[in-house]
Length: 146
Image (cartoon, rainbow, N blue to C red; front, side):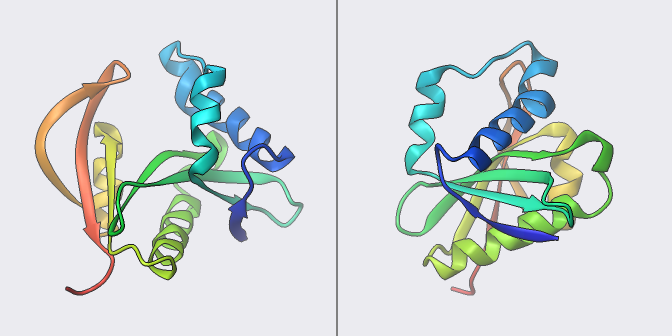
């Protein structure tokens, strides 16, 4: 498995948009707007590929300030969920963020994904809230000892 950064606007980026659409947006009746996709141009885009160079999973990292970076839009191909690819990609994203000087990863996790993130050391904080029509929790993980 090959996890790496991809460039916004590239062919690889377009593949991640398609994967996010199938896994995250369409099931909720949502579509990406051109403004939403344009706003992602300053984010970090990470993807995992299989042996045949097929896209397996992707996520976005959005810097919030000099210490905190937000993980979002985590998508694993539906036929591969539960096989460790998401864990590999999240761990890769944590190292990626640390290498760029970030010390804390935050996210808005779908309630159904909270146990997955808790197994990876993330903690819930705040109150449950609704986002894109479904329950979410704010979560965070310290990436470096303070």
